[in-house]
Length: 414
Ligand code: SF4
Image 1: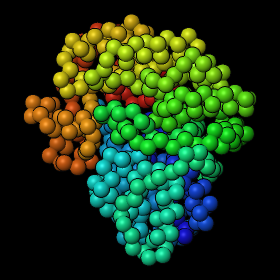
Image 2: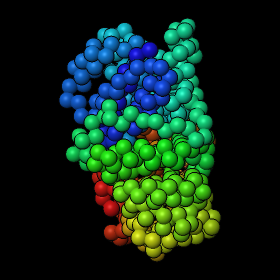
Image 3: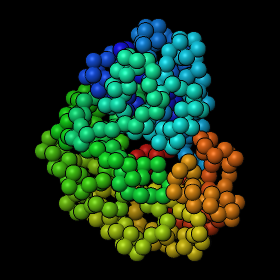
Image 4: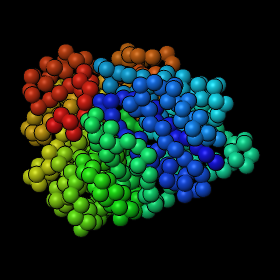
């Protein structure tokens, strides 16, 4: 079959290349299908570009990535699904084509997003193998279930078609390249749609060959696209050791969680070009061991010469100001390079935190947004510590930056 893969993500703070589609394109071609990617990130005439791509390639079906439902930030929230819904409608009504959707945004509520967009099929989770199966089934019977759950195997082949996307344009507009070493996360943060998802690791040498393709044409700055790099300490060390051996001269930034780390890992990360770690921290029901791990993490990473930017989510149900003040005090003492602090928690259907809040009428008083819609597709936030109060708690310390009003990311601002 011929499938046109569409990136409708036009958010530019910063612009993010559609690497999920690049992995998919390679897997689809491996499965005997023909693909093209149309990247609408910089499009100035959306529907003309879509029509031209469809007429030129003449696909049998289309696939659209739903990277995010919205920006997740309260102050400058942008909701993406209305524009996507119009694109789906246009493709179906003007071109008579079916639309498959996939991407991280589906993990928020696959049925809800499918219905909201009026798309034909959805793949939740990794689609690399599953999209081939779905296309084959559509080709054979034309009739199949609407929602599919993606599965991969460990050591998955990491082929990728990166040159269907105009990287020059991304770099010129403040974006950088990305790569991933695995999918999924075994941690259970109550507010995160990735929590307790199955983990699939990629073959280390395949990932390095992929980075080399970029280095060979002059792109040397990367952000790792894993939810958290250190899902498994042994794998992270193996990856960095192989990177060191490859001699590739790159600089890269990563997300990490405060577990599964060691001085050896940080040394290797530094030696292979890691200059910035964004460390995910939250204050929800944490024991002293959690905070002492954070202390050890920040101290060790910094002593190895890597900057640490903390993303700190706080103001959870049943937390009082004193508790938050105590956490802020700890972070002041630990002195990472910056702390982005957020007290607006975006709720999604079926998240543990959503169920806790919905079960308590007192907590429900702190909800704002589209609170009467049980799909949680349109933004709903829980907030009990307003911005003014948070400013007071921070006490003007320049280490802290309230997340939201300014649209940027750590690799640009730290
Ligand atoms: S560690 Fe990060 S990716 Fe994993 S569940 Fe927590 S917030 Fe989500």
